[in-house]
Image 1 (tube, rainbow, N blue to C red):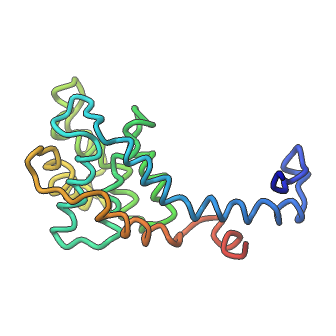
Image 2 (image 1 turned 30 degrees about the vertical axis):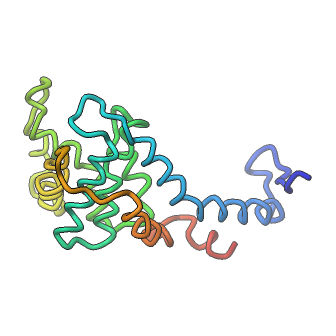
Length: 194
């Protein structure tokens, strides 16, 4: 038997009864977000893209370094997911990671993830014909130092095939805790009531 579905053909025609059908389904989808994020991280396993380590190992190394440095779980999850968008957003991977994290993290961490690509560019943009000082446009921004530090301490050194690296299973509980409840979302109140 098919599950009940809303009956409208245009959103403006939707009714409270339609949303009584939709919201519980939306909540199921929201609760399974960590599963989908974990699944996408696993897709990065074995995807080297020419780098010395695969994309998953890079993310795991960044998270391992952040944890070893005593960073909090939210920051560690940001380190884990900072390059999750590599395969979906070839031209804007930081935006993909930031979009996933936005409901769950503080502004400083969100900004750090969203801008880490330009800050990391200081280490290699000059090799590919770009301005390595592109990050200078953010001089004085309240989160610029945090982002530069993230790149220097966790993103930049996370390409070492011999580095001790915690497995994805180690970080999964952290990811689930961080994504358990959004800090900000326009849908937060409606989803909580569903």
